[in-house]
Amino acid sequence: MSPRQKMINMMYLVLLALLAMNVSAEILNAFEIIAKKLNASANQALNTTETQIKGMKKKIDDEITNEGNKKNEGLKDTLDRIKAETSATVSLLDKHIAALRDSISGVDPETGQLLKKDETEKNHQYFIGKGAEEDANGGRGSGEAFKLHQSLDKYVKFLSDIYNSQVKEASQKLKLEDEYITKDPSTAITHEGEAKTWERYVFEGPLVANIAMLESMKADVYEKEKRALDLLNQRLGVIDFKFDKVIAIDAPISGIVPAGLQFQTRLFVAASSSSIQPRFSSGSGSIKQEEGGMATLTIGASGGVIPQGKLEGTQSYSASIQVPKATGGVETLNVEGKFTVRKPEIVITSAAVQVLYRNCANDVNIDVPALGDFYNPVVTGSGAEIIKSQESKKKFRIVPTGKSCVVTVNSNTNGQNIKIGDVDYKVIEPPKPSVNMAVNGQTYNGSKMVPKTSRVNVRLEPDADFKANMPLDAKYGISGVDVLAQLSLGPPTKVNSVAGGEASTASGIAVTLGTQVRDSRSGTKVYIRMNEIYRVNFKGARIPDTRFSEVERTLSLVVE
Image 1 (cartoon, rainbow, N blue to C red):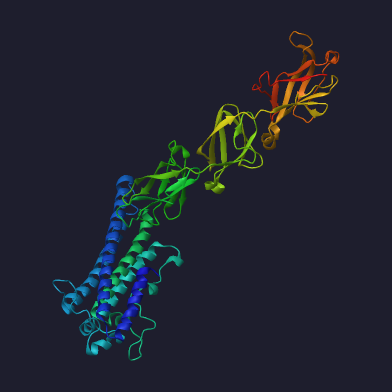
Image 2: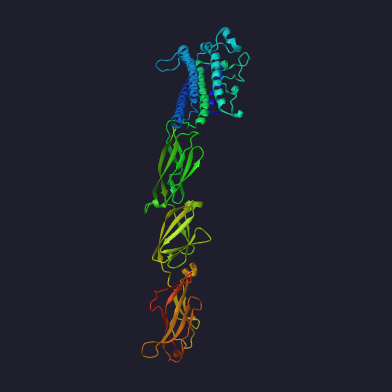
């Protein structure tokens, strides 16, 4: 049941209670308030049906004028008949309301309130009759209630006949016995134990309750009229608006959205009708049409709207809604709005490094926790090569080549590449390896002379932390080693050369001092000079390390 019908049923129950108790002023006042609200509802229904009939007639006239189509011309007469019968029935109900209000009760000229809300005898005689009249017509009486009963039945049959003539399926046709407003109650009985008639059930009570019931009957009349008009409306295809103005509304789900997530807003008009099918469009994002004349607009929140150095920015959007007009044509309603894009925190972690090393495999985890499952990173870098891991979408290898690197983090959400933010890095060289020399398997510190036949090894020792964190990049080599000796008073001369190779292994590069050193006098000073020192990165590329001076690349010893 509709809320209005539930209210009417409750009024019937209250009327029964009124007969068994002394009616308080509060209850009588409540009935007067209900009567006024029902009257306002009836007036609104009157305006709605008049607007609908006007629109239907205009549609018929347009068909005749613009298309030469007269197939619905006869429908105008049907609409006039419906309007005339409805007006006559409502006028009859208004006549009874006026009789109760003006003749039986009277109205306070200052407040407009009824003077005799609790009057029962005179309005009983008015509706049912008095004396022997009460028992006429099978106990229905011979008063105005019985006459009203007949008039309402006639009106309901009139509308039902029109309705049933428009439907083809038998299952859709109305059953007259179910349509009557004046059906006798199935459970109510009189104090004599007899079943109550509709007349007594409705009008036995205080005057103010009778007025409320008459107002509710007006609503019943308009409801049945509206149903018939809706059916005829389908034949014409005219949009039935129960309002005279529509307003486009958008209702954002959230006004603040982290960059990379999606902003959503519900779009709808401020009035609804099952026959209205609005069309939604937007250049700002994607539209998903929903039932009930609504749609959801989804827009990727872009970090590009956040000013440099700020945490928030404003992103604008727009949409349009096309709604059919009751008078024909389409009305376009524009929607414009804004929402705040908040910069989410980009969390970059690494078990290996806390800084970026030039020309090294800096493996990092790049995550944006605020995006959750929506996070689908697209990472690029200026002055660096970015290699995405095949194991996890959050793992990346950054290989910088310059002095600085800007890592840009985007998220690909629903086909939209949305910028999250930038992370600036300072790029440094890996720490220099240490140069060590071993003589006969022992580290040589230059404090004593060594045999001329000694075994000499040169080794480059990587920085311990760098080697532990980035083992693929902690490999070093020497292009070659020259052996020079101070054999005379002149400058040192080269006495031997050794091929280069990887020098960061445990054994390093073996250096042979040569025959000339073995034949030299005791106290001869020998120099071990390393040529180019280079690092081998994770790709196997040789990267010269030019930070070593001539002194650092030259080791010395004295033979005995």
